[in-house]
Image 1 (cartoon, rainbow, N blue to C red):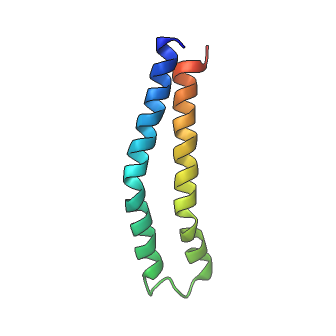
Image 2: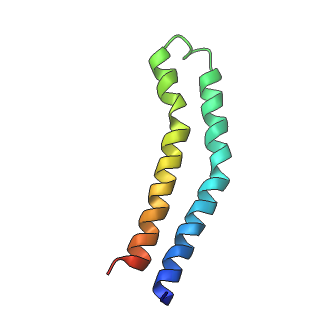
Length: 75
């Protein structure tokens, strides 16, 4: 492995760690929003709010993979 590839992987790992540190904030915020009585009558809104942690995780993994790929492996 070259130095460039190692740096790409390291940057991807750093992005994952920062994202995982911020994950409880996303989970708490979505739980607070779902617990709000003003939105409970809108089932579609609460269903979309329930998808936010999933979308956050998918975006985090995609971003870390893209950073690793474009930093270290794309020529």
